Structure formats: C-alpha cells, structure tokens
Length: 144
Image (cartoon, rainbow, N blue to C red; front, side, top):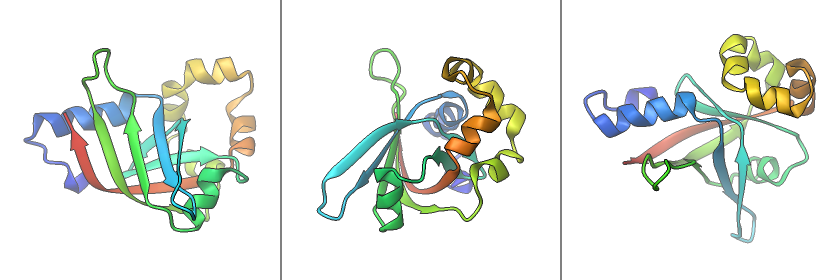
C-alpha cells in the first residue's frame, strides 16, 4: 500500500504519519452471517501493511481465516479530525508475532512502551500470548 499513497497529497501524508504514530486502531470484520465485529487493537504499519498481533482463539482471527473483508480505522483527533479509514483484505501469517518483531523490535517497543509497562509483562511474554499475526493489506484509503 505504501506505493498507493500519493506523496503530494497532504491528507495522505498525514495518514502515513498517523499509521506510524497512533497506538490504537479499530479492526472490523464480519462473521459468516454478515454481523460486524469491531475491536480496538495495537497495530504496526510495516511495508505497506497493518500488522496486528492477536491471540489465536479470537473472533477477528476466525473471521479473517474465513475470508472476511476488513476495515481498519484509527482513533480520530480531538474534534473528529485526523480521520483515516482503510479497507481491504487480511490473512493470517505463517510467521508468529515474535518472528515478525525481529524486523522492527526497537521501533515497536518505543511505540508501545507505556502500554507494555501498563500490561505488566515483558514484550517476549506478550508476543507468546499474542502469537498470531494478522497481515492487513489496505486496498482503499479515505483520509481527511
């Protein structure tokens, strides 16, 4: 998706910055009956994809495995500005979260330092708990 961002578009440049800096995204899937399921998640923007580390036995993982479309949006700015909504497809990676983390460990830990401290476990323990990696590749972008 990185190549889909237009570097001359100020809103899209702002969107990239939000993807790098915001800590919470809303990850929305649908179940087999079409009912939406939205949950807040930690995420990491990496090589044009949103990576979400998850426990395996969650609805979002089941929905992605079943081929659900995915919508990801970030928390907005204070007055409903800084909107970023991405839609597309996701898959479950064959690589676990610890394997992915080797590519950007320091950056991930810096981004989530306060959250990791609040969680009360070292990052390696967190990665064992949230070992399943969802790789979401956005196909459309809406930002303002």
